[in-house]
Image 1 (cartoon, rainbow, N blue to C red):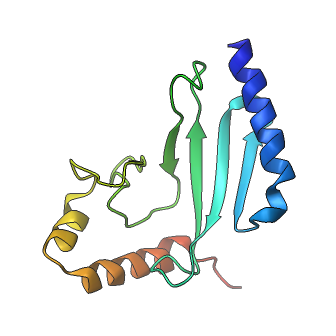
Image 2: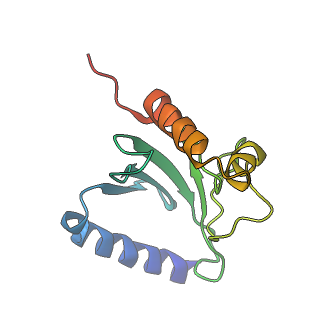
Length: 132
């Protein structure tokens, strides 16, 4: 466990040094627990997620790097690689079985416009900072 703590501390310091390289991603380590991180990610431009700010939670196992972190969205998001109930992220490009059947049905039927419209709506409702 001590080795994983040291590695995480080193990786976090590297992330902080490189922070200015990508200001659209903020990574924060829990002060009291090196195994808990959060991230704030700006939705990429020219995608249905543009304008959104998405918060994610990282739970890193004590066996890291032998076991991968668990990542889940704290912000509601419409995406085929994010489980629709628990918001866990499936990182493989081809998510089979599908994490959200409704989204995959849209994509499998070729309704890209419907998918993008729903993703924009979720982004606007759940991930867009409120004014005022």
